Image (cartoon, rainbow, N blue to C red; front, side, top):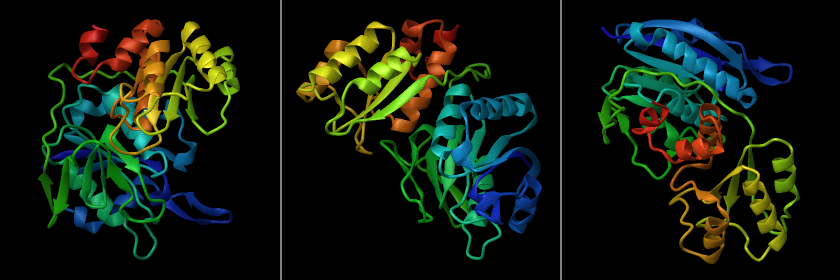
Amino acid sequence: MKKILMLSTGGTIASVEGDNGLEPQIGAHALISLVPELEGLCAIETKEVLNIDSSNIEPENWSLLAKNVAAEYENYDGFVITHGTDTMAYTASALTYMLPSLQKPLVLTGSQLPAETEGTDAKKNILDAFRTAISNIQGVCVTFAGKIIKGVCATKMHTQNFNAFYSVNYPYIGEIIDNNVVINHETCAAKSEFICMPKIDKKVLQVKLLPGITGQIIDYASTSGYKGLIIEGYGAGGIPDANEGFVAAIQRAISQGVIVVCTSQAIYDGVDLNKYTPGHTAIRIGAVSAGKMTAEAAAVKLMWALGNAADSVGALELFNSDSVSYLEFIA
């Protein structure tokens, strides 16, 4: 029988009604006790790492979770993390980068209704998460509403619908069908010794373009110590090249060593800076493309790259690396 460690962090799944709305109060062991179907599935141990609303998650919490997994890596066959849905995609991305050679399942799940609420999706999601954790899947994933999503590709698309998370620009890893894990897309971790890279640099600002935007916010960021900018552009990405003040501000930021990454406000298909003139302008002045990464994954990866590199040149190289080459770069 496989041995799984569940780390709880709070979120809706652990919430009860308080004086000011829902607030996390249910601990890890209590959550497990609400799902009797887990009996006999695997050996389960629990640890409460946090008990907060996920809107209060900080990058330091990602590092804490990564360190908890690293400390127990040799003692368990897989891991489940219960988490609030609002920032689950950020945490899943962070853990993917922080644990680049993970060769065991690390499964995040949560719910849209509290675990003790009638009609909740929490019990099914917890059960499905443990089913995923005893499967042959490797690496970080989100299991939610019967779907298994690669960690860096999960995005929350609904605030209330139980089918809250979609896989963006990547196939669903698998599904839970008739209580069984059906793998649709094989996962493969880097064939390297397990390593934990929990360092993070929070000095990244995400800017969503709006018609009429000026370069003031960019100048503020570059003069206030920010080391990275995520520009959520329109469509295929790029910057409004007719807005000379904005373009000039981006150029000033890059000249000061700030890494500027272009993502898209569109959810699917990713960024193609070679398609339109605004994209070519972005390339010309030194901005880089996030490709098919979600905005959440791009922002977190840039924080992680800045935290693990000696300077902006090294951070940019690390940001542009894929999961297989992380360890080669660090070595």
